[in-house]
Image 1 (tube, one colour):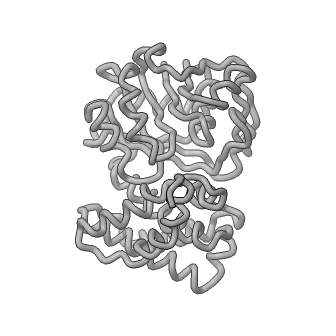
Image 2 (cartoon, one colour):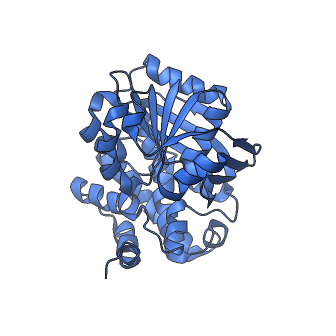
Length: 309
């Protein structure tokens, strides 16, 4: 397959790298120091599932020079999607599958507004990875997985081809029965964890063992379940227990990407995760005091990271 990866950071660098390693034609859309490093040295990935390097990398900052592709993996930060989505139009053909791998729930609709709903799938990933240096990725935890599917949950050849390419590359990949339910399940896990981690500024092994911050996370999880139910998404009677069990099974030093961005003073996905939860709760008439508190507590630093007062 001919696959464009938008944003070769911790997520895009890992999954794009695995696809390239397996022989797929991967084009990395990058800029700045990352683009320079890809062109000069290629891509280096350190992984608990085996280190590898891609010496010869096709990388560009100009989608127009690439032309139509079979699939696009969108792996930029969620807050960057509205700006980059229109630039992807030269990559689109009638059967191109655009798969967002961001945290949050709003990426598919944002991409559809710019590229056409017929080209956009739902998607999510699970991996603990980060950028060590430009074009140098470290996969530090979790068995990497990608889920993808058409927004109407039809089974299509383009979704199956991309899933099969990921499987061939050694990545766990799945087309769930309901991609929306799967995305909500991921959101249920990541939003409360991100908020509590960013506020406490300690790894999950610390806050999950303390009654007060653990209680905050528990209440946050219940809020997301209520928001999903109000929007017609049933996450299962065991959704709360499953989520808390996932927290308890994470490595003690685990943190979310939102937490790491906040702690390093960088713009984060605060609006796409905590802000989105508050917006959806308000629209559905659901009380979400924990997410409102987390948003209020983290918003000043977010604005400072973006150059605001």
